Image (cartoon, rainbow, N blue to C red):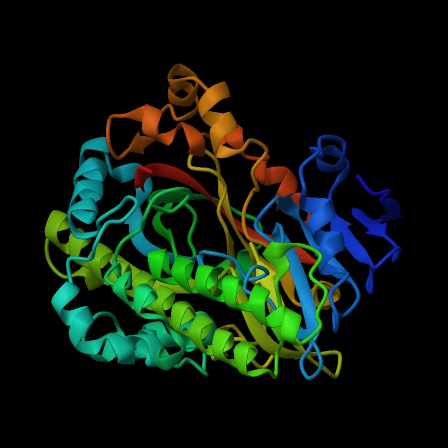
Length: 474
C-alpha cells in the first residue's frame, strides 16, 4: 500500500508520484486507520488521480473499500470542460440512495406483532430480491420515457405521492439532461423494476429515532425522539447496472480513439464533451431518475401499508418525507468558483448551510444527510458544515464493508448473525440468505460518522435504530 502521510485532523495524504496528476486525501480516524485492510481501494484512488483533467485532490471517505474502477467511498472531481467522465467512477447501481420518512407514532407503543403486520403489508407491495419485477408493470410500460426523463415529479403527478414530496428530494427528484435515446434496448428491457428493493444491502427499515444530538436541526427536519421512522434504501436496479455495463465497454473502446491512457479497465473514461461522454451522461441521468421514481413509488406503497394495518388515512400517521439523498452519480457543480463534474461513488452530496441548492425549508441549516449502518446497527442523520467544501461538498454514504460478501458467508455463522440481530424483526426466516449482509461484515458506523464530525466537516443531528428490516435475498 502506498505511504500515507498523516496531515492531522483524521486526514492522510498520498502525494503526487509516478503518473498521478492529483494528490489523494483519505479520511480515517485513528481506529479506522489502524484497522484499515489491504484491499485495492488505495490503488484505485491513485488510479483515479492519474486520469487526465482530474482536479486535486481525489478523496477517500471513511467507509472506503474496493469497488469496480473507483472504490466505494471515492470522490473524483473533473474539470467540467477538459476533464473526463467515467461510468466505473459512478458505479453499477446508479443513484443507489436513501430516503427517510418520519411518523408521529410513539415507537415504544408499537408491539412486535404490529411491527410484523406493517412489515408484511409493505413486503406484499414491494417485491424484494434479485431480478424481482414491479407490481406496476403495465403503468411503467405506458409512461416509461416520461418516468426516466422527468423523474419523481412525473410519478407524483400520476398520483403516487404528495405534492410537497418533490422539494425534499435531491435535485427535486429529477436530474436534468436525461435522454432515453441514449439507453440500450437491453437496459430498457431491465426497466420493469420500479417499486422493488433488490438484494444485497438494499432494505426497508422500520426504526426508532432513539437520540437527538442537535435539537434545533432536528426540529427543522421534523424529527422527534422516540418516534417511529422508515428508511428506504434502493437504487436503479438492473436498469442502472446495464447502463454502467454498456458504457464501461463503450468507453474502453472509445478511449483509444481519444488517446486516453486508462490506469485500469474499471476506470475507462472519455472526454466529458465528447459524443460518448454526453451519451453516457444522458443515460446515467435516466438511471438517476429511475431510482428517484423507485424510492418515490415505494414511499407510496409504505404509506398505503400503514393505512391498511393501522386504519384510516396514511396522513393520520405523518409519514412525511424528511429527505432523499443519492449515491453513485456524476453531477455538474460549481465549487470555489470552478465548474466541475463530480463523480461520487458510495458518497453523498452534502450541501452546507446557505447553499442555493438546499431545499427552501432547509436553506439556512443545510439539508439532512442520511447515512445508514448495517441491518443490525444504528443509522445517522447528519448535516454538512462549511468545511465540507474541501471534500467537494461530499460525505460518506454508509459504514463500509470490512468483509467481502464471500468472506462474510464463510466467516459469520447463522447463530452469530442471530445474536447480533436480537430484538430486530427480519423479513424471511432463512438467516443464511443474509450472512453476506451481517453486521460483522461492516465497519463500526459510529467510528465512520465520528471521522468527519470530529473535524467539523459534518455534525450529528439524530440517531436511528432498527426495529424491523425488510431485505431481499441474493
